[in-house]
Length: 542
Image (cartoon, rainbow, N blue to C red; front, side, top):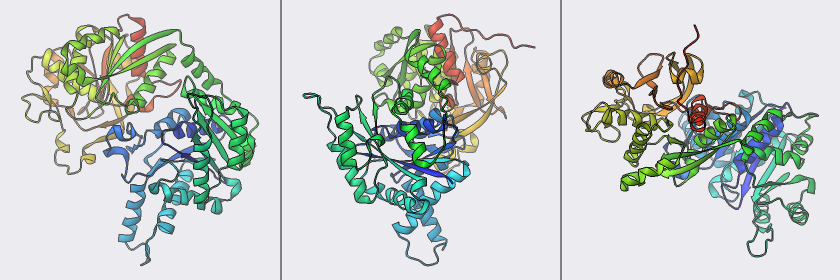
């Protein structure tokens, strides 16, 4: 029988439900159980693909091309899973499905309502995803906060699942903030009490309460939470601030949460294996070296816009026993004040992330030029790959005003352009290259020696490509396209072999980076930043 764990949050968003849900999955996974995870997002967008990153952080891409909430990235990283678009469920997707069924006459003339039709659709999505994954446990994170009007159908659906699946097969976990007052240093539980009461009003009594606080809650606070939450004290846990988010499963398990969940759901789990996880955590919190990375982007005001990239850099750092300090620099600053580009001299490496549109593009190009001319380790990803192509075309190939048609449709040298098959598409998402695609790497190149194989698969999310009409010119002037799509139409990696470390990828390696299994491009970048020696590709064994 599949078990279901529902995670809700109160008081305010971004309190850590995604990390808690991932940590719950890890606690079950190390005990030999097979979890899968679903994110229920109340927003009316069908998926996260059309949202500005400042709204909800980055858009995380799954193998099958799903454009999902960033929390799916946390689930994948913690659990080393490859989730699908069905693991992300939004209000928009639910209503779209129900309306399509209504238009098809599937409801046989009935009046279509929130209950039962919307709630049934939500429940069916949850159950079908669990079956497809052949999971022992399905963890469902309900986005937003308790009391939000848009989240009520999801809460009603999970309330009904207790009755349908049974008490022994369902578990409600509620996480809420316990602030500490600056003046008195008192831990205040009233916000948590109010969110629990709101949850009860909806018809859900939490089985577990997790206090989110800067410090471990004291015994009096724990007693108060249990008393007013109407649960036993051994069902109250605290997720306090840690040096690394990857410590959270260990912190909660030490408090007894893993054993409590297994006992409550009837799992007979006698052992747990944290050795690999603990090794990775130790590498994160006890580094031997340190590097400073300049991440030059257009969304520098919200680090969640680059969360998968930041974590991939840290994964690479852990493997190199190196602490990675990331400075998020606004690319527009280098446009407004060209002299400020000299700030990059203070960093061990320059990283250019994804992006869309013209804002900040020239600032990123200036940073790429600085990296190339000053032999500073450089890694460009997605838009960073495209802008590196533009920078080389302008400043080495002497193609004046070379650009992307996304930035300047009238550029005389469109070195980055839409592919011919994309130009007649009406909807923007149909012009996107999404999900996993195969890539062939050329032997005796940096890319090949990073990945150590001729064919790899990586995830993509982009619209524009290197214009085939300019590849010969770029090659003649020294730019090496070391990775290509299997049909040779799309350029996937570029590099300058005589530089310290200079490589860019059209694909998004960060989406497959895992603790202990870093993306090879990210690991190579950190290694180059740490070693300060010329990175040369090794000859391919014959």
